[in-house]
Image 1 (tube, helix red, strand yellow):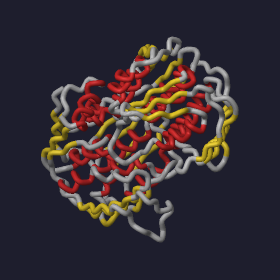
Image 2 (image 1 turned 135 degrees about the vertical axis):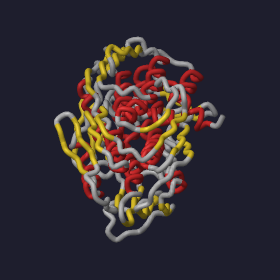
Image 3 (image 1 turned 45 degrees about the vertical axis):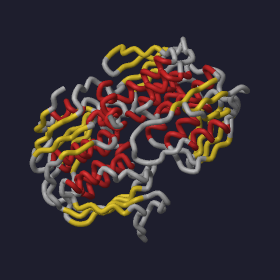
Length: 455
């Protein structure tokens, strides 16, 4: 069994998916209402933050996704009690933190990149952290050098072996001056989770400022941390001796909301996304409107719909917040196959994120990927060495095909493509989609999709 299939099956099993295939009969608009809960990219990090507290934490609006299951397993391995006290609410009690066996952590962490973020909290609590080889979606190199360099700056000693990485801090962790070469979300989270209990002041330059980062900072402040967010991506953290637990409702998942919005546009449908909010989606909403989509903002969510008429081509450049998120471009590209004219998507964050377009081309899309990117005089985002560009010419009708999901966002994009296509599609490895999309099978059913899923 190849590793991708194994990862997909493990991910699906964590949320109760028994089958790894779905058969979709396309051509039917998606209509109805679905709800989005807390962001995958916040909830899992908030769970790690609970390790830093001396008392239990309560996290609300936790999505029922595979990655939450991975972090729950890892926390359990370290003696943290994770209890579901109500649907979507987790109580995390770190009062009995203990060292875990490397083999146990390795078995749990194989399909996630979250384990690297355990380093700072574990060094504070146990004086040692063991990190296996990291998994996650195969969309680019995602080196962990930023993380390890930051931890070394705090005084951690990093030893690499055939098993993975062992970190120790014999002299404790001290505040540091850290300048990230790129505003990496993961590295920023690493610094925050380490600096809050390090001795002295930490200055972080070129930090990521995504909404999920701001929500994590809010959680840490509730726990007793002192964190100042300055202009120009600078964050100051004053270390404290002790942190307590928190009670927090996670920020909604803007990536899932944007994905369903793209599904509404591509299928000429009408989807109300309960829980979605305007502010965190403003950059996406601008592009959605330029393509020809329509939306209505309500107190309890956002209605996304195709208002009729032809869709328009656009030029999109992905970037760190407040730019257009890399996670948004994959679902949107499916809708762009229906636009009249040539659209260009410049991917500047991950070098392999267009791999999912192979399946779309097989289904009839006219997409050309330029592996070295495209130069443009009107670019707003500086061209980066690893970037690629996709040129989408439309409109092109899609037809059904057999598709194997390659990664999380690409997988959801394949679902959208199958829903828009003429005929029947069989999609395998759907367990990967459960890493970040809660109850997506039930939501497809609620929106009137025509599909067969046994499980």
